[in-house]
Length: 352
Image (cartoon, rainbow, N blue to C red; front, side, top):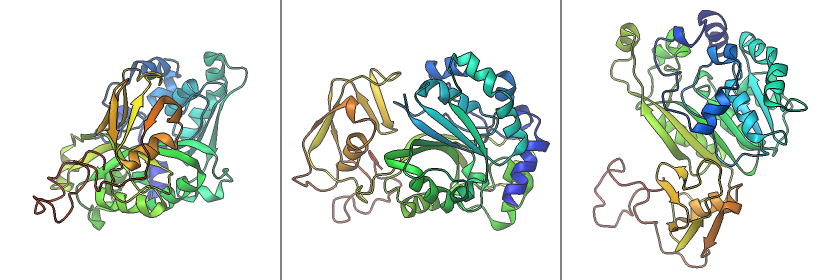
């Protein structure tokens, strides 16, 4: 049902983003200035058919090769195409013909708007549950993005596994989606409106962490989240008791990450060289790294910076020669420490 309903809902039922019944497939946070400027260079028809729940704008992507899963009418792809520049590429994958038609109709318009000699964007029709059938190159993409689409597919593990295979070592899956605070009951999962509104296919956050880690993404990092409003009373009645959040995560392809955030006495100094985040670099919601200041960091965070495209923007202090246990205020406390009776929900989480 999932693919057919998605094609019908986004290709035929919805005429534009104004037809949505909830804000689950809407982006409410204000874009950074560079993203806002790039958005103004996107064709108005593409913008009118945009359905997303977050800002998929990873940092330091100049010259990068990006794959956009569920690219829709192409707004995110055309924004990212401007940021990566002519040396980079953006490949969008989508399964809805009507959305792809809008995206493809404006390829040349955007090339001219951007002032590029040739287009650095292409769109591929396909099911993101079956990326292995699309002849996409393995170990190729610097970043894979997705904006409120993985919730629409049934086999979410297949998406995460394929993304891991397609990313370069040190690359990342940077995506926004909808999450629930409990598993959505089976009888609601087949509701076409709830599915099209990105709710009935939402992942229970605990299941998402499990899917991500089994695919190889060992330390998922939350970048941003917000509660979702259900404005339609009929939709709200069906979902009574379930809370939903839009959240942006980044998942790094780093097979040597540990299951906990471990302390090796390491630190980094941010050089302030990433465009748009010259003063403070935001790795995730708990790591806002001020330029020029020594910033203590766990081993996993160290690897996310040292073994990725971010390495040139940091000075690294220390190594892995001495282990000091769990990084302070990171994840769950050791079970034999004071306060071990606290639940993980109430324990501080600086890294995880």
